[in-house]
Image (cartoon, rainbow, N blue to C red; front, side, top):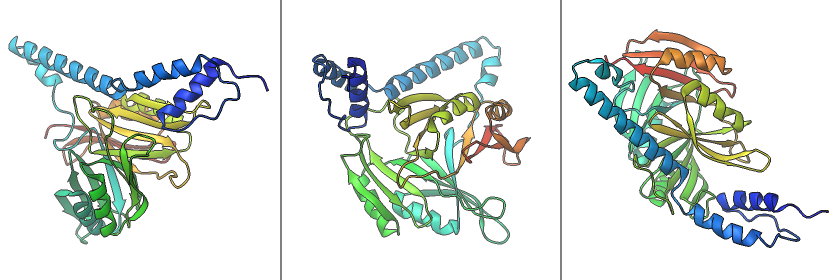
Length: 337
């Protein structure tokens, strides 16, 4: 077999380095490969793409705020109208909506495992939970009881916590089963463990190691989607929600090993389904500046309608779509009421 080119050898070695794996041995490695890999290792230690993207976002936000103040001082009032908050206070741009039964017991699991704080609970006349919100760190989980219209739908969530080992232990005490204990050998480089709770949800419990979060800090709660054809989810979110891919690791064959996607002030993660981590179609609540426009773009990108845009009684302009992977997106713009 002919020796592979330096470009192919280098590409595979870099991909392996990014996910902390060993590249396959080369029978005749190019003599330039080793010095190139030393340079790549140095570059890897520089600020991550997430940091640069977050810095860019922060600078753009500050510039927008400055422009708004200037216009307000001019007495136009136009800037003030444009800067109306489109997200409901207390929620980020992306929040997992986890539908379980019984939801009340799930809320207790969130409290005991993750120091969750129940912010609200709306019961039905029959006593089940129509909607609840549990704060975890600087994020939240929305919770409801499953019913005929919306059956139970477990989800996967990546949590950043201060002490993954202690959090992992509490989840086991609360009835979760272990995928693996927190370890420093996770491909991400973070101190990372994983469990499955009694309701079927996956929790990836982690703390950063070896990198510095951007100016906006870490989001405690990040939905994690295991998908078949994960590479096609990225353009869908870009089209539908104005998302930005801020970190992408793919195999030479184009398989997404991991990607971080930013929507507004929040992020979610995706990868190609593999092993124990198979697709889990879930529900996501996403706040956007214009729910009607995002709904229309979602349909153009291949989603199907669940609910057409309407003014909801709780003060949101709300709509719903289901993407090609079976995930439901509850699209909203807070009307300020």
